Length: 102
Image 1 (cartoon, helix red, strand yellow):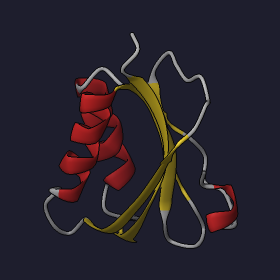
Image 2 (cartoon, rainbow, N blue to C red):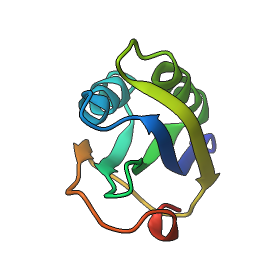
Image 3 (cartoon, rainbow, N blue to C red):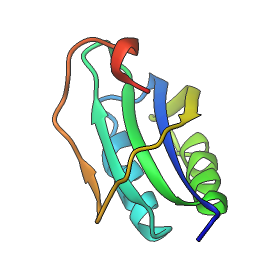
């Protein structure tokens, strides 16, 4: 499975209090992806996702197309070497912001 990638991501915009984490979890599971997503006290959402490259890219396209009131203004992402699994979960909220997203 050479096309399996692991991506750290940080989403800003209207992404808290609108079901964004639950939508991310549902969409990731539907694509067979593993990882996690959590709120950050600065108002962003961050996480890690792992799976086939095309499915990971599809997840980010799905997130950008979520209906209002959710709105992903920016999705920063970068490849990381983490091993994730076996599911896609919602993790506890953390403080901080950009220092721990990727």
